Amino acid sequence: MNNISRKIRRGGPVLATMALLWIAAVACVAGQEPPTSGATSTAAHVASDATVALTRPPAPTLAPTTPPPLTATEAPTPTAMAETPEPAVASPTATPTTAPDTATQDAGPTAAAGSTTFDDRDLLEERAFSFLNELVDEVGVRTSGTDLEEAAAEYLLQRLEELGYAPDIQEFTLESPAATLEIAVPEPRSLDANILTGTGSGSVTAQLASVGQAKVEDIPAEGLEGKIALIERGEITFGSKVSRVHNAGAVAAIIYNNEQGNFRGTLGGRGRIPAISLSRADGLMLKELVEQDNPVEATVAVQDNAVPSRNVIAELPGSGDGVIVIGAHYDTVPDSVGASDNSSGLAALLTVAEQLGDRTFPYTLRFVAFGSEETGLHGSEHYVDTLTVEELEQIYLMINLDSIGSGDRLVVSGDRWAVGHVRDAADREDILLDVSAGGGGGSDHANFRRAWVPVVFFLSDDLSRINSPADTMEHINPRLLGDATALTLDLLENVHGLPGYGQ
Image (cartoon, rainbow, N blue to C red; front, side, top):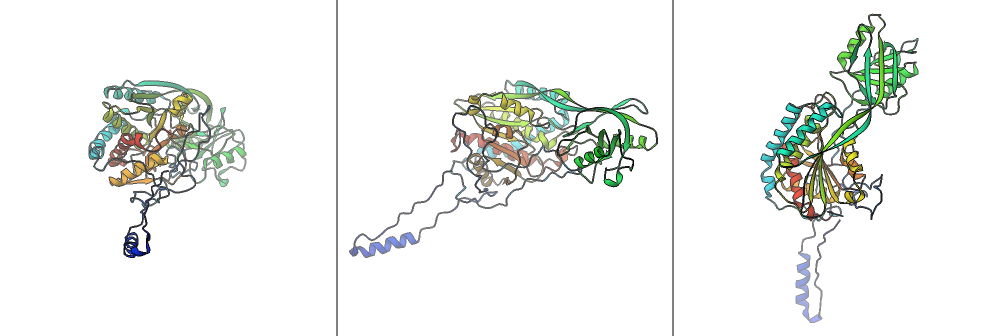
């Protein structure tokens, strides 16, 4: 950080006979205003021992697994799976609007007031909202590692080609456990099931036993030896439910939803029996069959599965060294069109690509739409792991756009030298923005950060419906799309002049 101090030249007596001049000099100094702490920002700049600009280690041979702390701590993960039966995804913790302290304020240049980038904010909002509509209405659900995700990649290829780019597909394969559920009675049929993270693996065939919400009083006195427990979601954690039925002798667990549709979740640890989730409709159907006192036989299987996925990459060559990556994941969880998570971020990425297609910058701009983010950041992990140390050192900044579409204001986190510019631009242009004071890293920028690449992470302040069927267009705030796109474009216009660029 470069602190700018004002130097005050103080007059003093030179000769005893020059008393009048001496008095005038002292009076001048006494009337001088003290140095100020900088312009008022839209969000407090978090000051702590962790707010030291991230710098790359000299000539590393391997990317460190534990990078230094970010200057503005990252926002809560928008893709984290709920560990409780009724999860509530908290909005990012952000400090109230205050003026940044001089000890933590950045000294880099900012765009001049009246920038044409912000003059065009209404147009940017309109274009981003148009792309978002296409993604939701025409592409729809883009479940990670499926044919639906592949169709979304083809859409992106077509769109980027129409914008004048020559995009490429980067294919990869991830090992991902898959769940299946087969019912033999009253007639053979397959039901759609999801795994619960932390589940045990294997395949078991046994009779179903309905055990309510798997509270202590719900477990039958005779136990569940050799049975598959059918459990309703709610009241207690998934891990507690599965542990309790396992201790009672169950060989597998099926948790069905307490609201419409299926869900994804985590046991919060490693389970010892296969544990899967089911939609409410299918769960109630099985419960009704069990309550008819007819044996219902089922086969629950959780097995590793090689899942194909892909990243979509387009590049705008620059006139000098360095690369700026702008990324957004394009996959969704099952049964969700992902209006905010992450049609919104992808729409902003496409709008930036559209605006800059005929430009040349002092650096190369690389657009990356990541696949299989929702299953564990697999697309960005593969991308980063394929780069050499030299190629990583050429990436001067990664800008990540994820879940920017719902709420009242944007939230930004990342390395101070870049976040400070975004904060100052938002303040100047009256854009509602908070600098995150939360923790976490559950989005694609985390894989760049572990490789010592500086990052900026944009999201919004309402994450309450992500990873669910409720993440729909009616909850989108178009203004946030225009604001995020404008701030990204402004950062790209000025990034090569900021103090931390290329360090």
